[in-house]
Amino acid sequence: MQKYAVNQHLIETLLAWVNSGEIAIPEIQRPFVWDSSKVRDLIDSLYQGFPIGYVIAWRNPNVRLKDGSLSEGKKILIDGQQRVTALTAAILGHYVVNKTYERIKIKIAFHPVEERFEVQNPAILKDKTWLPDISQAINGDLFEIAANYFELNPSVDRKKVQHSFSNLMNIPRKQIGIIELAADLDIETVTEIFIRINSKGVVLSQADFAMSKIASNTEYKGNELRKAIDYFCHLCIAPEFFKNIIEHDEEFAKTDFFQKMQWLRTENEDLYDPDYNDLIRVAFTTQFNRGRLSDLVSLLSGRNFETRTFEATIAEKSFETLKNGVTKFINETNFKRFLMIIKSAGFISPKLIRSQNAINFAYILYLKLKELNINAVNIEHYVRRWFVFSILTGRYSGSPESLFDFDIKQISQRPFDDYLKEKEEGELSDAFWNASLPQSLDTSVASSPYFHVFLASQVKANDKGFLSRDVLVSDLISLRGDIHHLFPKDYLKRHGLDRSKYNQIANYVYMQSEINIKVGNKPPKEYLELIKSQMLNENQLVSGISNEQQLLANLKMNAIPLEIQQMNVDDYHAFLILRRKLMALKIRDYYHAL
Image (cartoon, rainbow, N blue to C red):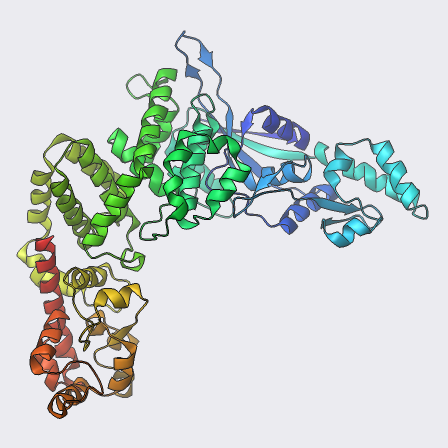
């Protein structure tokens, strides 16, 4: 069955459709990211008669209205947004929203004698041989523009310039290919077609389609909802953008959404900076009890899963439900209390959180349990446990959507305590703590989720840095401290060990740089002798540790085997085995105390 139609249309026809809303440019997550020179090159290609590729549109399905009539769906531009936006900017003179969310104009100048395009600049504005803005020429009176040009440049070859002007004015009448995907295609098929057609292999995510659906629906204020999602994510990263919204989007500044995100203008917390994909996923899963974003696209289209028809009432209800989810996501109390829970588990820095899916589902869990009126103390306990559980088991690293879908249904249908115990008994047995986890710690990847959980356990326990008397691991993490080697790297390299061996995470420890410098390239046996020597001589040349009790306590809190005090390079392999076991046991005790 033919899944699409390919047609050639005039540029001016495409732009007319954009102006009338027949084709919706949804202003999805990406602002206009092309630089001005790329716009210039696109116009030059059209002028020269070169093809500029296809754009892909997907027609919204026809929706049955309450009175039984059908409303014909608009086309949504799902690929080619940058090119079409560039055309509206250069030819129609429209504003574009750039990477920093500023409204700017991109003006392309034309030299009719040299038949050359350039981005308008101060030098061009002073040079009368240039037309400073082609949009004014294309949309103006050609005879008047030509007459004015010849008056300013009487010596030019009139015939040549007139030919150039004619070619310039014909740019809107050049053709562009439009691939229109069938309205009845499901989201997975559309995604596959997009990937197959797109020569760059750019993968458009399910969230991109959802944002397109949201933004193109003005009847249920989808465009306002899209802005709420977009602006919230931007403000999380750049609070100073708040002023820009007030100055350049007065309409949105009057909405309830904007009032609900005002707290972000002074917020500099960066533990969880969600993007549009994260926000949509959390809001959708929480409110719809589903995990697959393709279902959201269908619901926003008004799909009735039983009758396989599209109904306006379902679309309206779906938009309202999603709006409710977004409102709960951006709520200051919800957001801050959730972050407080994550921090209380020891995850105080974004560099300790490498699984965006894990933190997304933790927020889903928080919002869902709150909706179910679970006791606040229990919510904190459950969210901490599940967050760490999902990291340790890599729960959302494989097929996150299917597991999101499975977990949210379980949470909605049974007591969460029962579900959590069931998962722990099945996946966190003694074999996990004693064998599987130590084996997982056998890696040289510093970004290992298991190492991050170990560091979180140290933060939670208020552990001191290695050989520090007062400085906490949490201080070293927060203040951009460095990870150092228990068996110094250069020492191991001198003895022939390669990177994969000396960079084992079981050899890593947070340690003050000044102490590390004093330790130098000595084996543990030698530098720990220095520590013991300073105890006897009552000096603190290497560390603030002043007695053996403090030293042994410091080794224990850093999960370092006591045998290290007698170790050199020959003992390194045995040391790694011992420390991995101690690290795993520390993580186990930490987990059970959450």
